[in-house]
Amino acid sequence: MWRFVGLRTLQAIPVILTVITVTFFLVRAAPGGPFSSEKAVSDQVRAALEAQYRLDLPAYQQYFSYMADLFQGDFGPSFNFPSRSVNELIFQGFPVTLELGLYAMLIAVLIGIVAGVFASLKPNTLQDYMPMSLAMIGICMPSFLLGPVLVLVFGIWLDWLPVSGWGNSAGDKLLPSITLGAMYAAYIARLSRSGMLEVLSQDYLRTARAKGLPEYIVILKHALRGGLLPVVAYLGPAFAGLLSGSFVVETVFQIPGLGRFYVQAAFNRDYTMILGTTVFLATLIVVFNLLSDILSAWLNPRLRYQFRK
Amino acid sequence: MATSTSIDSATLAMPKGVSLWDDAWLRLRKNKLAMFGLGFLLLVLVLCLLTPWIAPYSYEEQDLRLGAAAASAEHWLGTDTFGRDLLTRILYGGRVSLLVGFVATAVALLIGVTYGAIAGYAGGKVDAAMMRFVDILYALPFMIFIILLMVVFGRNLVLLFLAIGAIEWLTMARIVRSQVQNLRQQEFVEAAMSLGLSPVAIIVKHLIPNALGPIIVYTTLTIPNVMLLEAFLSFLGLGIQPPESSWGLLISYGVETMEEYPWLLIFPGLALSMTLFALNFLGDGLRDALDPKASRD
Image (cartoon, rainbow over all chains, first blue to last red; front, side, top):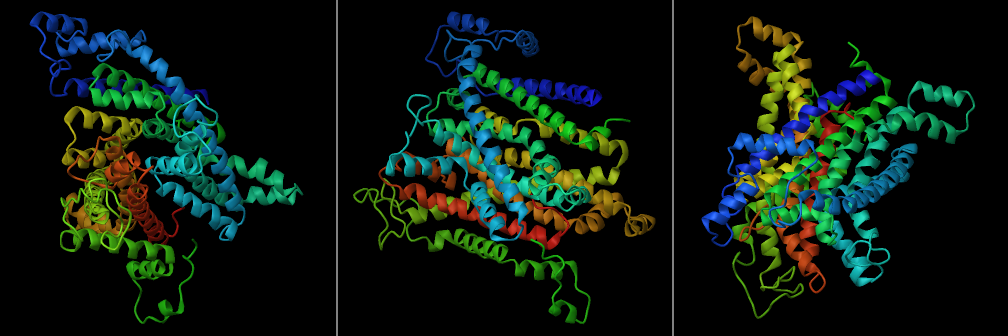
C-alpha cells in the first residue's frame, strides 16, 4: 500500500510542474503586454512597472524566479489590484468556493448514492426507471441553465429563497449548492447503480445471504463496499468538475469565490491573477485525483497489485 | 437495458447470416428512447440545415416597436428585447451549437483514433510511453486551460474547435487502443501481415473498421459533452461572440432578462436540453445495440 502511495505521488509531481510551465508560457504568449492597453504612460513609469513585475528580464529568468517564488508559496502581486497580492485574493476567495464545493459534493454523494443503490435493488422496474430518468435530466440540464431556472421558480415566482449572495441571508446557500451538485448527483447515481448491479450478482453476496445475514446488512456491509468503487474513483474527477462548475454557479449567484475572481481576471486580463489561480486550482485538482486514487486502492486491493512488479 | 439476448423470430427466419450491423439495427429499433432520440436529432439537424430557407424571419430583422413580446401567431416563440423573432434566433443558434458539436467531435475522433490505433498496433514500449502521456494529460485540469486559451488568444471559432477537440480525444484514444490491441492478436491480421500489407494499410483497412462499433458509440456520447462545453464557455462570455449566436449565448441573454421575459430563457434552454437528451439516449441505445457486453455507467 505504501509503495502504491509513494509511486502515485511521484507521478503527480511532473504533472504539476507541467501545469505550471505550460500556464506560465501560455500567459506570456498572450498578444500585447499587460500594460499596453492602459492609457499612455511615460517610458519611465513603464520601465518601473516592468521592473516591478520582472517583465524586463528574459523569459527563462522570469520563469525561474516565478518558480522560486512559488516554492515559497508566493504567487506575486496582482496586475489589477497592485496593492494586493494574488495570495490575498486566493485566500479570500477560496474558502467560499471550498464551502460551496463541499455542500455540492455532499448533496451529490448523498442523493446520488441513495438513488443509485435504490434503483439497483429492483432493476428494470419503476423503482429503477424513476430515479434514473431524473438522473438523465440532471445530466442534460447544465448548471448554467438549472441555476437560473431554480432562481426563477424558487427565488422569483415562489419567493421562497434569496436569488443571490452567500451567507448574507438565511437559505441563500441552498440554491447554489443544489445547482452545482445536481449534475454530479446524476452521474453518481448512474455509477452506483451499475456498480451495485455488478456486485449484487456475485458469489460472495450469495454466501452472505446463505449465512442468514439480514438483507440490510448484506447490502450495507457487503455489497456497498464493492459496488461503490466506481463512485470513489469518480470523486477526484468530480471534484475537478465541481471547481470549474463553480465558475458558472458563482457568476449566476454572485458569490465572491475563486471561480468568480478567475472569470473576472480573465476578462480584465489580469495575468498574474490568472496564472496564480490556474496553478493553485490545477495543483488542487491533481492532489484530489491523487487522493481519490489512493482511496480506491485502499478499497480495492486488485488495483494495488499493478504496482507490485 | 438487457436486449442483448433477445434475437426475435424475424432474425432467425432470415435465410442468410445477419451482419453485426443488421443485428445492431434490430436491437436499436426496439429501444424506444433511442429511436426517439434519433428521430428528434434528425428533425433538429434538418431544421438547422435548412434554417436560411425556412426561418420565419431573417437573422438581422428587428422590430424595436414590438420589443420583447410573448408567443403569438406571428412569432411562435415570442421575440427578444430587440424585437427579434426567438424561433429564428434559436434555429440560427442551433446551427452554431451543432457545428461546434460535430466539428470539435470530428477533431477529437481524428486525433483519438489515430493515436489509439498507433499505440495499440505498435504495442510494447511505444504503447506504454504513448499511454503514459495520455494518463498525464488526463490529470490536467482542461477546463481551466480552455478558459486560459480563450483569454490569451482571443475568442475565435477555429480555436474553440481545436481546444475542445484537444481535450475530448483522450478517452477515444484509450478505447481504440484497447480494441486494436485485442484485434491485433487475431489471425486475419496475421494473414494481412504475411501478405505484405504495410502497417498503415492494416490499421486503416482491417483494424479500424473492426473497431467501428465502440468508436461510433463513443462519438455519439462525445457530441453532447462538446456541445455542453461550448454552451458553458459561451455562457461565461468566452465562447461564441455576437453577432454569431449559439444556444449557450442565447441562454446567457435569457438569464439577464428572465424576470420580465422568462421565455427568452426557457425556449433556448429547452432546445439545448432536448438535444442533449436525444444524443444521450441515442448514445446509450447504440451502446446497448452495438456492444451488449459494455456496462452502462
